[in-house]
Image (cartoon, rainbow, N blue to C red; front, side, top):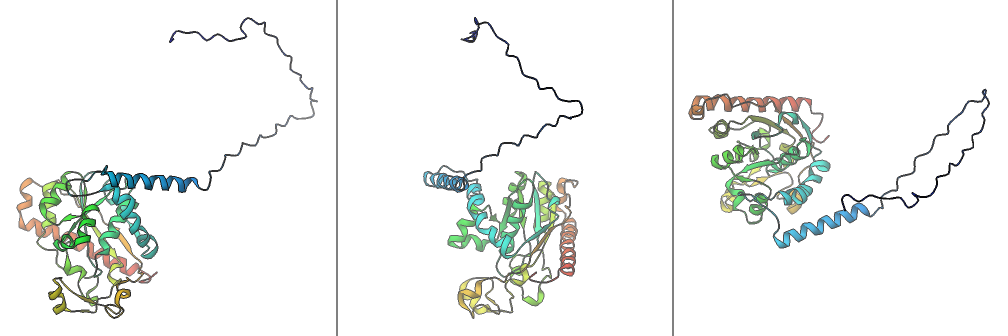
Length: 326
């Protein structure tokens, strides 16, 4: 069949030329070709996009029910994060806090990197907004794997959601594994001291611990990207701390704000502040020797360098800010 020759049905018929009629045009009359209007492209039916969304949603549910989806060794579920968790956080990011992102080009397009940010806001919403900022603004749509405190993984529902969203325990071993695998890892070294500080100390960085994040980056040979977040400090102005109640509940602090606990559940609604997230120039670590991670003086100097860069950027952003809410 491959060598078959296609023979036209009218091959034996004599071909007859059909003369074309040519209209004589006077020399003084120029020939003007009328433009041919392109055929209109048929518009998509209004229900097409909804049909695709419904079909995609049903396919997603089918994979959930049948277990036909993947998670990594840390419990990270990329499909659930992209299609559900990010979609839930995005309205808060875009419409409520109206986050503005600067310096996204300082995050590498590929390979591991450690993003170090300030921590604030009474509740750790800044980590979630940072995750959306990296994914939605980076050209490669990279995912940020946040290192979280032990308390996060002790809470029943929060534990499962945090794992699914790619968060993992804030320990050097897990962080190094992720960095060596080429992942973006986010850490907020202030910890509970940062998010639980009183409103009067806003935008004043707390201690960065012993520099464990620097040691991890050195061992993995990945750059450190300082990150400064402005706007989160004012979402829950913490004017007091019920320490006795915090000890009874087993939490680091029990915040008292102008609205909580006085307004009950309504007091847990954050104020609609205007946020800015700026990523600074990366600090390379691949030029150090392997034993550099054991040098305490080097750890102190690099930790102080990262902290100073974040603090300086915070002050700069605060000077440029027109208003807390606009």
